[in-house]
Length: 180
Ligand SMILES: CC(C)(COP(=O)(O)OP(=O)(O)OC[C@H]1O[C@@H](n2cnc3c(N)ncnc32)[C@H](O)[C@@H]1OP(=O)(O)O)[C@@H](O)C(=O)NCCC(=O)NCCS
Image (cartoon, rainbow, N blue to C red):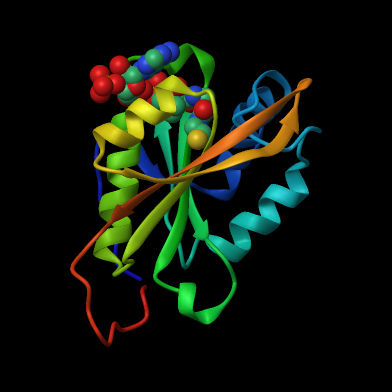
């Protein structure tokens, strides 16, 4: 595994960060359709996900001046089948007070750079619509709209399309080594 890129205010997510990551996640789950869970997630569940994923995929947190977690960005497997090994599903969440100031762009750019450095080929993000900020963020970082799944989720009393945004992270190789 390569060393994570160092940038002030951004570092790999640690076990001790997970309660803050959970709080940010659950606020979105309860208040927004951006996350298709409908009930708050549990800490043990997030810890298990982190234990399983954070070696193979980058998980980053953005920190405030006092070391508090302002947001996180993480990658994980798109699907468990072997041929998808070079594709990572990515996401980024900020606490409400930290949005709209360029932090999501900076944090996500770090995550994508780390994925590219590790040899991943494609980053894929599913955006439940409408989500103007998230679509703008993905377009800004070079993602293109690969397709829209119509009315694939129902939350808060309405149907939501999910836009699939894709970003090629590196050159296509015929015989890529395993990412890592
Ligand atoms: C989506 C999110 C990560 C964006 O991060 P951010 O720090 O707020 O975004 P930035 O300030 O870096 O701005 C990124 C782009 O979004 C645009 N933007 C930001 N907030 C916006 C808003 N409320 N409405 C419309 N556009 C917005 C910015 O203008 C910028 O676009 P530009 O580059 O074309 O000027 C953040 O809003 C968030 O955490 N939202 C809740 C969780 C979520 O939806 N996550 C994405 C799941 S797919």
